[in-house]
Image (cartoon, rainbow, N blue to C red):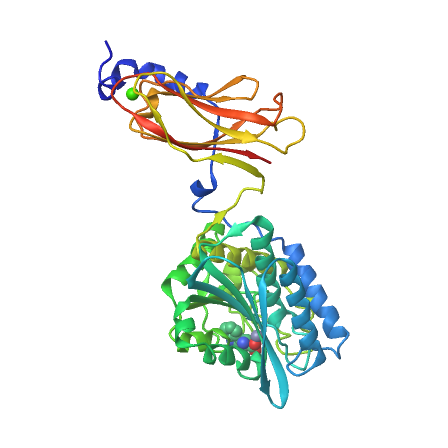
Amino acid sequence: MNLPARHRALAVAGLALAGLLAGAVPAATAAEQAAVAAPDIPVANVKQHLADLQSIANANGGNRAHGRSGYRASIDFVKAKLDAAGYTTTLQQFTYNGSTGYNLIADRPGGDPDQVIMAGSHLDSVTAGPGINDNGSGSAAILETALAVARTGYQPAKHLRFGWWGAEELGLVGSKYYVNNLSSTERAKIKGYLNFDMIASPNPGYFVYDDDPTIEKTFKDYFAGLGIPTEIETEGDGRSDHAPFKNAGIPVGGLFTGADYTKTSAQAQKWGGTAGQAFDRCYHSSCDTTANINDTALDRNSDAIAHAIWTLTSGTTTPPAGKVFENTTDVAIPDNGAAVTTSVNVTGITGNAPGNLAVGVDIVHTWRGDLVVDLVAPDGTVYNLKPFSSSDSADNVQTTYTVDASSETANGTWKLRVQDRATYDTGYINGFKLTFP
Ligand code: TRP
Ligand code: ZN
Ligand code: CA
């Protein structure tokens, strides 16, 4: 006689491990990948963007300043890369000092439109030089982060937006224009603004803005994980494009490696570099070239930016696109009874099924150990996905199994077969999905 399922667990606990090991290996589904770690941002790619910005300055009189041809060329360069990566880009024009200025806004399609996380950097230089640390560095790092979002298929749960500001060097002109021209509704949707202005100074410090506590902690956690001490940014609060956002009541944060202030001996001890020397001796001068970049700082800060964006937008990564065949018709599973099936009809695939056929199983049940779950190929071959287990008292079978189905013809009717082999607990098949890569 069968005992009610809830009372059987202890009697056969010793069999549990063997039972668990016998099944196919469940792979995480997209929905299970709730906290997706940010990718490593390749610093070589960021440096290539800096080399390109240097070339733009070289070809345009040595700078990328507001109202000069090098600024417009910088905007066009960044915009082309974002357009190719699927961003929705907007060029916002303003006039300052009798010249046309531009902000570039790039929206990642998707995410909650009422919760916007934004990252920005000024793209203009002073007229004295090419502005590679100030602020090619921030501009290139957020560009590469934006491209990494596209490359990895990351889908932020919050809406993600990037901004490249014009005429920062003339008094935060572009970012003020952007914030002033937002309707109060649009302004209220921006839940965080992250600013990156000078993040690869040649004698770097690791400074974190201390404005919004959540954003600040996100950055500090990242550096703590690397064992790198940080300090609060104090070299002139409000000296960059986060100021207009902050003044509008938007939570802000950011990173900075130092401008014309001098590195103290205490700072040189914790970060290396040269005490008694400016963080950036080429600040606002002609020597702010690709030679004026500390690669380690650029690398760490680029990764920290990605970490913050991934963390603050909390999204998922979609598995590589494949052909999906799905059946979501409910099928009741009789208690301790005959096997039932649900099926999908696979068509349009040449040759055999893959060695990594993704089998999505969604079964609602009050004691899943009762269930034996099989995949049945079109020719009747059976692949056991999950064995019976008297001790697995958890609810539901909701996972994706990976099956080597490479000896099966892909096209035809594939079945999910489920049998309940013990009395008391019951359930139903809620869905069955095959994904061919
Ligand atoms: N925004 C300044 C510039 O571009 C640089 C700067 C000085 C800065 N102090 C700062 C940037 C503090 C961010 C935070 O010339
Ligand atoms: Zn700057
Ligand atoms: Ca049962």
